[in-house]
Image (cartoon, rainbow, N blue to C red):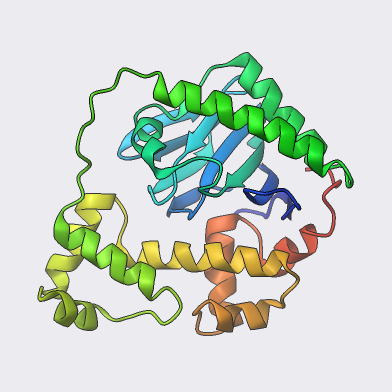
Length: 271
């Protein structure tokens, strides 16, 4: 396991912003995972390479990357010294599901004005009392993102989302905390467990258990930023115990739940 990076994470009082996440990683690589929210990413130093919908992408420092919710992706350093990144996780009030297809087709935007505006949002979010400025700047960012996504002359291509895989994903979404066995899923969906795994993995590029764990970690992040204890969060999000949460959280976020929770109290910290 690579050493933990430097992270600062918090939830600001700005409508539509689920989380602000600043991180500096040198060796850490994200495995395939999903988010409930839109991921708006800028890289300040170094570069990140990642796979989205079976295509490889990169995020040099002059790029704004927009990753849609529920689409599996990974990430790793593309430079020897790692990378420093700033991320905004945005809910559906900022960007709608109708834009997911366009974002999957071309998630990396080379737009100097957009990148400057995203950086200005981060600066405002780091200053208590400047929430209105942050909200105003984010509104302009959202407008420009929609212009990019809606201006593309892209013929709609149906996503590989077979009925069985989609039904299993809906079942997992409905039982994030409770969980379920493949045998239960097979009974409910009238399919052999092995066929379920193959169908889901083929459709989404991620195994059912990876999808479920990333959904649980996503919920855990929100609760930790509210100040909940890691042990309580583990129970509330469906993990067996705190050790189980810690193992998967560190794998997907790069630090332990305890360090992540503490980082939420220091939005001004360097990263």
